[in-house]
Amino acid sequence: MKKDYLRVTTVAPCIVPGDIEKNEQIIAAEIDKHTGQTDILVFPELVLTGYSCADMFLSPDFAEKTTEALKWLNQVHVLNHGIVVILGSPYYGPHGRLLNAAFVLGMGPEILAIPKKNLPNYSEFYEKRWFSVPSPEFNESGPVGIRLLQTSVFKVNDVLIGVELCEDLWAVNPPSTEQVIEHGAEIIVNLSASPRLIGKRDYIKDLVRMTSARLACGYVYVSAGPSESTTDLVFSGYGVASENGVVLGETDYVMFTDQIMTMTYDIDLDVIRGWRRKNKTINMNPTDPVWKTTIQGYTGPVERGYSKHPFLPENPEIYREIITTMSLGIQKRLESCGHPSAVIGISGGSDSTLALLATVDAIDCLDMPRSMIHAISMPCFGTTQRTKDNAQKLAEALGVTFKEIPIGRVVTEHLKSLEHELDKTDIAYENAQARTRTMTLFNYSNMIGGLVIGTGDLSELALGWCTYGADHLSSYNPNVSIPKTLVIPIIRWVADCHMDKNTGDQVTSLHDILLDIADTPISPELLPGQQLSEDTVGPYELMDFFLYYFLRAEWPIQKILRIAIQTFQDTYKADFIKDRMLVFLKRFQTQQFKRSCLPDGPKVGSCSLSPRGDWRMPSDMSFEVLIQEVKSYDVTKSN
Image 1 (cartoon, rainbow, N blue to C red):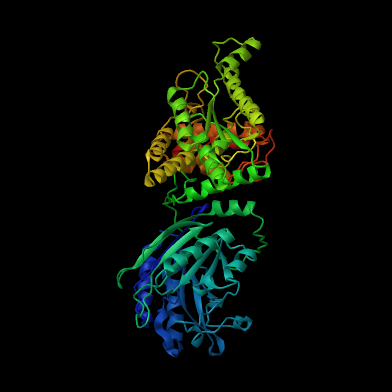
Image 2 (tube, one colour):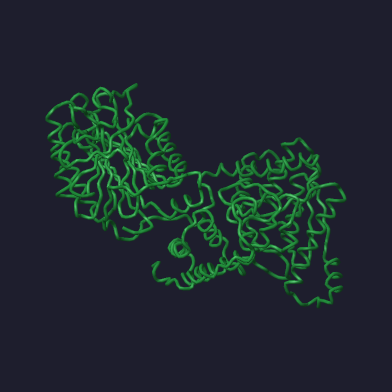
């Protein structure tokens, strides 16, 4: 078992309702198959008997057979085999009272029994006909070798695990809340027997996803399959897992009654623990549980992939929401300032294009004429004909006011006044252009009574790839929390929207212009000839990957590097990734002073570097420990 991951495997086997001896053999075979391949093996609710046994649960023969089956499974197939197994079965307790329970095997000679807290008794469910709601008196002795666990939380190695059963997830006050708050559970498993109904699969997935988000935990769900009796219902065999609100995977519905459905999830404990360190709303004060064990578990490689572009949404329709959020921020700022004009510097590049698109949306929503947007092109020494033309074409296609203000002469005179050699293309040569552009925008906005709309993005702010006192200043910046790897996909989405709504030459032109801008290499265009940003700072997909897992997931530094090497192994060499991570850390540390005085702008996604919001750090913070962690990392470990 790896210290930063817990591997959970779910199995929805083909059982025979009512045949306990047959079912224990089926379960034993699955346990043997998965021993050494996982840490926790989870079966559905009442899998040992079948959920659909109905009044047969009351049979005295069931009590003896289930108890003996559980003990046999624990002693022969689980205990000392380096695995923990959780399965559902009736619990025949004192005074003839019967519970619907989850049994935890592999914790020691005694088997833990965790009762279902919420019994459905409506529509197709009649659980209160057979089972009792657990109460304190059930702490009395039950079958020998089985211990009723009221807290529903136990520890495997250093991971706290809670258990719910089916309806518990749907309850107004689910047990998982107490398991997390009072006992610190990090992973919740749910043993279920859920009928297959239209729309129910998506509903369950949403419940699991939002529960894991609300409680900052991993949540694993598995349901009984169609080998159950189909007298009145068909059971789904559905399984799904989520981690802090992100779905890790799900099974298809079982298609055949003899189909075994399995799914394995590697749950990232660092993601859960990192968010809990930050989110004090989850106010936990757990005590160490009495029931705990140490297992070897699964020791092989983690079979979990990570997206190269973690900022990208799975559903492209979210791009509309992003544009709307940016637009609303601009609308409110313009309203609060008396509906002035908006002034924006456009370069023909992707960042200024995105900011302009959001500003156009804002102006349209405010029912103001688009002519109140002043798009200013300020060509200088490094401006290419492609970007210069695209800036003008974009403004004309959108119907905004366009003005070209060349700044070459002003910059030249300024450099002369500094006694700077005109052929010396150093940092002063570059920044003189950037600061002249910002001065021009602010002075022009003063002249017409407008506000300057910023264009710098989140990735540039993280790396300090902006000029202090220049392009990182504005009256309001809608791009401030949009990473570079998200900017171009949004522009392409807008282009596709206009292609779908192709009703005239202007729309077609806008579609083509946006696609050409999206295809334009990223450059500050401050030097003559080709000047590519990624040649200096490194590939933005790498930098955004580092940023996401440093800022959002709060992974350990070496883990970020290790997973980056695994994720990008087909794209970049390990030594290159290591070198770029050093660049990221050094720039992130040394450029904090620029972020400390950011202008206002909306948080759109899960990350922000605003000094008034998500990220507060002294400008002279030392990252030496983190840098040494990267330098000392042996890249061959990730192979």
